Image (cartoon, rainbow, N blue to C red; front, side, top):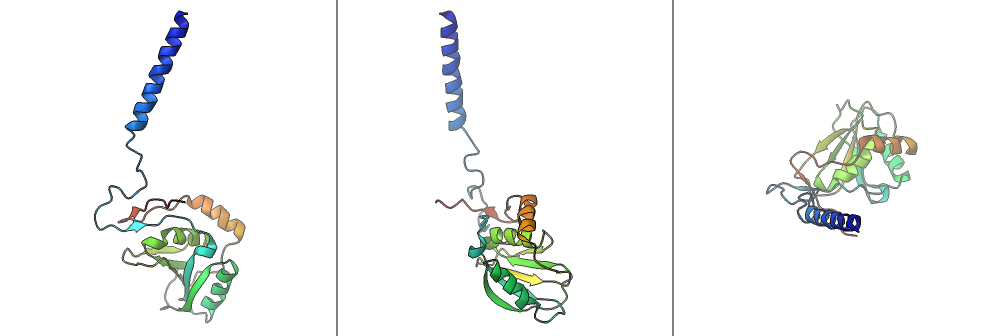
Length: 172
């Protein structure tokens, strides 16, 4: 009988400890905009499906028509290609991804299509969710589906760029 009383008392104490820990949890708002300094933009970190990602494709290489061919590749992968054109030449990187706070998650996905070799160019003042893909001289081709999936695993979850805060997750 004494053992049952001790076990019952331990169970009540454990329950009280768990309830206290949950009530006092200071990480309940982790990953949300609470505590974000005034004026900092909220970065949308949601990974989108390709059909929901809007992009502009620009050619900064010496090869004419490169943007059009790559835009077609992106269209075949179900991206929403908005604009296709030329950019000032002189980019030696594989690509440059230009985006604002609303395009952080989309840029993260696009980074996988360049095997994490695209240079990010975050602009906190940009207000749209479109990502500009500027092709550079080192660009060869977009990654395959398998390579994209592996690259996404290597990249991990999107993070808010410096000077921004993660936006709260959207309610579903």
